[in-house]
Image (cartoon, rainbow, N blue to C red; front, side):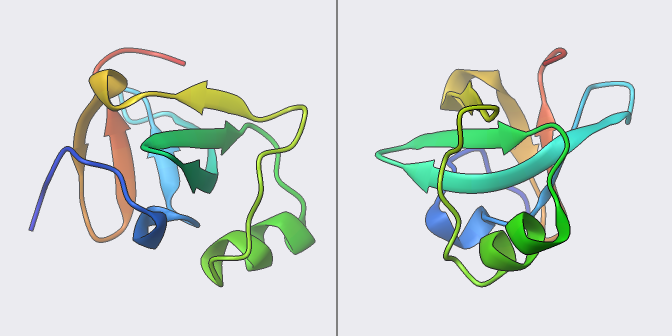
Length: 81
């Protein structure tokens, strides 16, 4: 199943550029906007996968217009982050 709308259930997924390069981890989703941490630590990864993630200062905002598709394993971007 693929889709384009981001939800809190997507927290903890890898975020990939159009060329398949991993750019980070989706650590939080707040009000329809995702936050990508380019270098998450182990604690950030676990929190995100449990739905306890939060946007840190180093997390980049990701709006839905930047998303090509969302699969069970990853969020694919339309371009690069």
